[in-house]
Length: 176
Length: 315
Image (cartoon, rainbow over all chains, first blue to last red; front, top):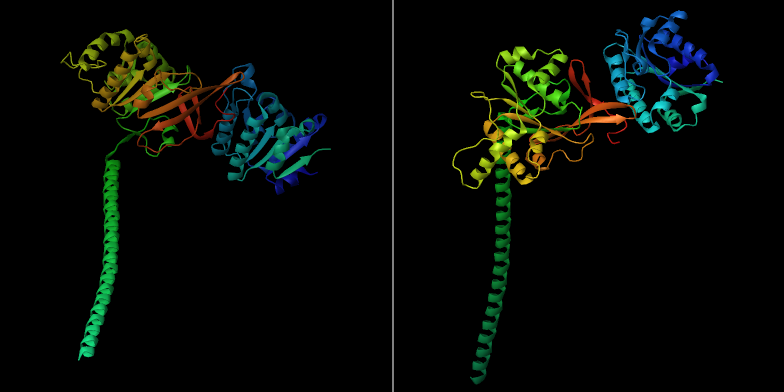
């Protein structure tokens, strides 16, 4: 599987990875998105903004190629005021995330999306609302011909959400 | 000779019979023709009726268009909100703002008042709940400058006690019964101040002064709506409801009398709350029929007319 060529050929990808390979695959995806888009909107549902930025720096990936939506930090502290991130109140604040996503694409000129991860989102919100939300985000993406990678853990393949996403995306990439 | 006479007689009879038959034929033919004429007449009447209806409809349409042309609309100045309407809120309308605690009704009212006052219009905020100082404090928290528009005389904020209202109600009831001949107004406005926009916060507080006198409250509300109509001011009347309301006012009379109803939602999702807004009704104006996202930011309210709310508004 070559994610780089898959992203070139397909606009919207569902990346399914076993949890033990998650970090390696995420790093790989970040590199591919950094090269394959002008700017990627990174939706942080799994790890907070500062942790992600540190991780990018450690791996020599330019953080300025990303705009962040952090749904975690505001749950534990008052978020800092930064230009490259919108802090939303919680992972289940789906309307807030959707509004932040619109801002990232309309004002911050993003043309790619990395959603990390659908599996964590399932912990916070009900599958029906998440499907509505993802479908809305996908519609916005398709209108602007954006590229996207939605990350999900293999352990959630049988969930209602992931099953439905098979229908919405252009390609499902499963990491063995 | 006799036989000739008989023959002649028979001939005459035959001729008579023939003439009679001919006459009957002509009669039948005339009947047919008359029937046809009556049918044509009916058709003509019908057609004329349709033509009259068309003319009437065109005249009505023309009047309506003229009315539309002269009708004025106001914008609220709330980013995104006015996009929910084709043109805006018709000026002179009485609009209910219904919603639960913390849903943004008061801020919406203050923000609209600030916007119109800074455009040079006269705005009057009638508070039956919070003090003038507290309301000014809220406005300052959003970085607005209420003092400037208050000094210019465009914005007035006045606190009323709901019980002040009940004192004048008995007199109003007497007037209704014809026992009193002087005019009693349902609220006293500052002298010489004719507001373009009135915000009444809230009808729920006014209703609290009428406990056990629901009939008096209904009469008062009707008088209040008539009073605002007479003033030709646009009025926003705040009512406190449940967080997810099914009834939008204290008695239901208010929503019937109002020209418009705007519903504010404060939706609970597990440990967080999301704000949303909906134009439920607006007489004389096309509007979007959906619940859309709203945020109370540190600069005021922003409405997102294209952003749906995920997970519905129900509990």
